[in-house]
Length: 298
Image (cartoon, rainbow, N blue to C red):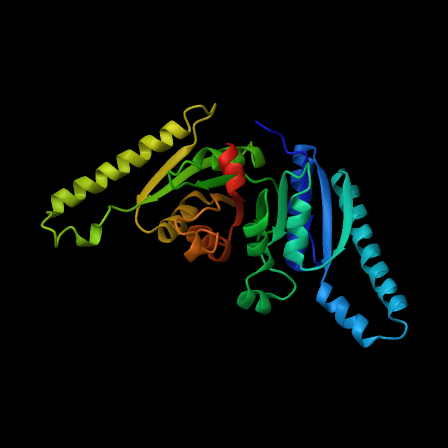
């Protein structure tokens, strides 16, 4: 299993950013990894500052940059001291999601950690949060943190759709939380289930189709977990994915859910699967998203 050597965490000095910083630092300590701490100043705001302060703007901008650079350095030193890890601060300017994704694409970065909501949650609601944009654009796995990091993850749910990308989702779940109790979860529906009775199928036949779909899914999950040293729990339930996952998260008490980014319709889902979007917005859990690049390589 490939180790995690370098973790990139984004901060905007907000409460959500603080949760991401702490989880990333905890993971870095667990994996003996280097932590890269990035903060991006809004490029458009700096440009507006330059336009309004035609005289002496250079001095004002320099002082502003030094303020944020010092704040980022203090935060890096605090994390390094408390967690006994190596922390490298990086200050950039531009659109946050693009700067984070650009930094994620540099050699050596294994994982990106971001907060679920930024400094402006109302604006994020209408424009799409920085976290969702990073998930769409990042070439490496992204951990979206919603909850406080009090301890390592102890219960993890891998949400699987039986696509060829399942092994990569499972691999990443084990890489990030190797000591956690793992559950593989899958939601299934019977093809044309709502129309079968109109097509002449009896209730007994529909029930048999459903049982066959369940057995097929269980066989796929067992095959997927076949090479693992410790056998994970497996839960296969009938219903729509978002409803089933909500139920499975409650049953397993998982603190982390791992899912692939791909969707069945890239045009409709805008490169982010509907189940993944639901988890990011509604699950209340930390969400670890596997990008297609990792899915293909696995």
